[in-house]
Length: 368
Image 1 (cartoon, one colour):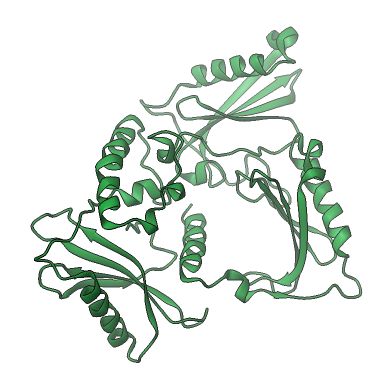
Image 2 (cartoon, helix red, strand yellow):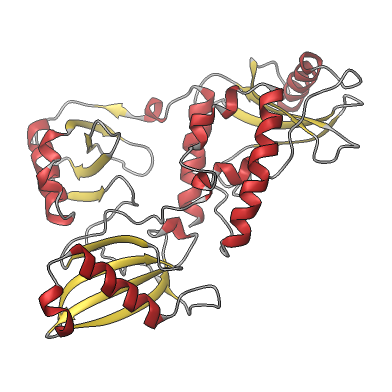
């Protein structure tokens, strides 16, 4: 679980800095013994169609790309990365060895599968608590859902079921448990279904296929409707707009938390952005320009030499109204190897640095 988030956060930080992970990828042309680009794409299609139900109905309409390159980490020889992209921004990815062996494959809303993986790979079984539906309820909901999907009405009474309540990095990124229900006929697996802890439908597939949807849909990001975090333009907000953001979203998120027993992932940006209250700097506070300079000078002192520094985010924190703070994300360095992103906190009344740290991929409690 932690490993998954670290990778996501590292990618986000590099995007914020303007430095791409591709800077560490060396692309090469296929050589003798390597499969060709068209062969990689066809193999990837076959892998996806064999593992995800219904993909063959639309994969040919997707835009496909294939690249052979050294990806760091963890591959010490070039691999094929094949992507299929739809107009709806859904993406399937397959990684192949240079000779065409399957390394991994993934659907738009899920974690990568590796050869030999199935829905029970690396799971931790647990018992439902007072806020979770029971096994009997999960089975009944699954039966009702299967009946609505169709094709089982005439033999539903012949299907037997087995339900498991479990955690896995694959399901909800490990943040919440799920119900995994198997349907058997004459002891032969026919269908499998995934439900949220509270009974919400996630996905169902026939035996022999992998789940393509493994994320419960009603996270905080939809607590106030269908608005997504990035659509709010949070990073480009003025202090006045961010103050309005706090007024609107803090109550909505707190209401969501009260109704959802599992602590949300630190990766949920609505959660992170509502851990403090934003306000508007006043005439008695250190100005933003002066505070940015203080932060930049401080980082140069910390690094022991002069670096180009840029402010990547400025936040005026009034969570403690008696002690307002400037919070800055300061980028230092302009290459992959010397880049660092610092969070610098400054007393908005006195102008002194009260705290700082380098933001890294293991900071699962990171907030704005």
